[in-house]
Amino acid sequence: MRWQQVLAVPAAALLLVAAGVVLQNPEVERQEVQQPDDAEAFTIEPALAMEVERVDQAQALPASLAGTSHGVQLLSRDEQLVVTASLRDLFDYYLSTLGEASVARIQQLIETELQQQLQGQALTDAVEILANYLSYKQALHSFEQDYQADPNHNRQQQLTFMQERQQALIALQNRELGNDVAAVFFAFDRQMDDNTLARAAILNSDLTAEGKQQALVNLQAEQPIQQQLQQQRTQQQQRLLEIDQAELTPEEKYRQRAETVGEDAAQRLAQLDQQRAQWQQRLDEFRMELQQLKPSLAEEDYRQQYQQLLEQRFEPHERARAQALVR
Image (spheres, rainbow, N blue to C red):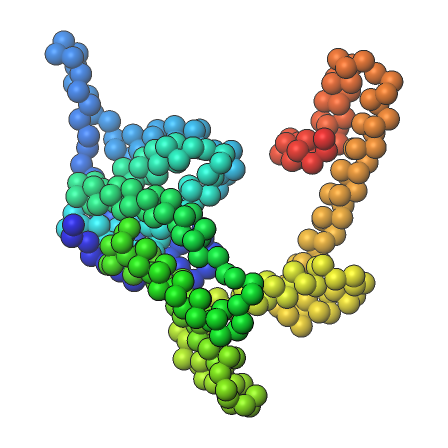
């Protein structure tokens, strides 16, 4: 196959769109709808037809994707697919529902999306990459079973194992997707893994404490800015999680959050804490009311009272969540 590759690697989480990806040529010809010979021919606007298709697709989405969007816009040039990391984001968006939906259903959803954005050879290539990516995901399960760390290994053995595992993973990705596509899909992951291994090698070296610290500083400076920002976000998220799990007063929690992510973010997190506390209080009150009802009512009467309380205590968009949390 002939793909034009664009090393556009997303800087944020799975559902964020990689920068630099644009829509394919918006000039679309009107599509003729075939009618029986005795019927009057007519045309339908492609934009309207696409909208109808999108509505049909949205209605069939797994429940966990309701109200969300992958945001990925695919690109082709001269009828050739431009491969970007955002194509993998699109795949993973739908694959996140695995268990809720079957692999066959997920593949169907992805292929429908590809058909809405691509055509001709670009579409053929994208469908083939999807099949290869699904094959990779299946092979990855066996790979993880084969490469499990031995807790009895010393630090040097652990480092050697990590290095061998990384090389084997790259080989698996290249085999299933081809070197070119794999290089685009996993560029950011490979950069992060290389950095992790480099840090481990420094920490396991014979350098003095000062030498190790300087080597780590140099390594950090050599990283692409995108990778540095991602590491910073990861460290911040880990620190925020530690703060949430600690037994702190609201004032202590606010101060530590402000030191980690700044005053504005700390204020937003404090507001979120308050909203969560209010929501939990409403759930607790709802649960207590149900417990008082159940012993005194027949099953049918209880169901009616349950529904009335649910509608009284929660807005329509809150009810499904409340029902799931209060069993």
